[in-house]
Amino acid sequence: MNRKNKARLFLSIMAMALLALQACGSLNVRNNDEKYTPYTDTTVIGSITWPWKTHYSNMASCQTALGTFAANTMRWKTGADFAVVNAGTVRWNPPDPAGDILPAGLITKGDVARFLPYDNLSGIAPATNPATIVTLSLNGAVIKEMFENSFSRMLADGTPGTSYGRFLQVSGEIQVFADVTKPVGSRITAIYIRSTPPTPIDLTDTTKLYRVAVLKKYIKDAPGYADYDKYWNILAQGSNVVDSTIYLYDAAVDAFLKFSPFADMGDPADCSDPTLNLVITHQ
Image (cartoon, rainbow, N blue to C red):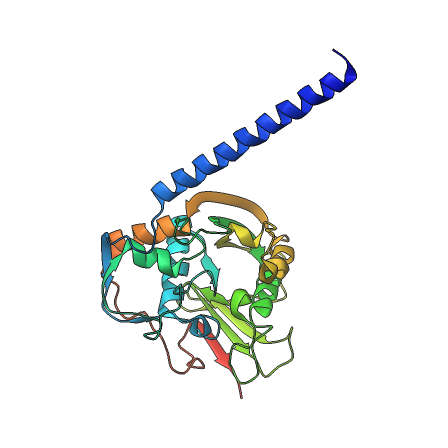
């Protein structure tokens, strides 16, 4: 076989391989669509007895019931000391002209797909970066750095500014105090593990470790997710990363099936209330 024919054969083989890969990709998408649900799935999985705020600006400026539910679910599935999930991953999508409220009453799989728009892998709302829940070990200094990043774009009056993808909702096991009137990088004033009595995390300590549940996309570079770039660098300082292989969507469905009904989990009007998970001091 001469060189020209060899080249043609090689190109032909490569083209066939690309077509095969595309076919596999399509098959994977179809399989995912069978596993995950579109917004229209009316399968009832539980209920809430109090309406939950779902607007993006609420998620990026204060602890919310929906954020608490998502973070608590991640902690429940992993047994971590606490969990964090960013605003934006958890929000009502598409925005609801009626006011972005998840009303009290029955919850369906479609509802979960809507408030986890990047994790449901549905054909109607294709997830661009679905991520499993992972745990990793962080010391107090890195935990402080993580929350400093969370509050770095909030304005001094307590409004989100451009926080959104950086702002973290937390599980009930942790309490974070932030003063957004202070310069960026020095806004976190205290962090406690909510034991009895509450146990402060030493924000300068580099030895004592805590197990923290996060989504895999925070520690793995993913194109198009600029809001996570700082978290990639911060959480890369962690150790002993364990992938649960559980998607947040699946965990949320399981939580509704097991623990419903969910009562009022708190959508406070005043985010400086000292009893909250995130206590925010502002002008």
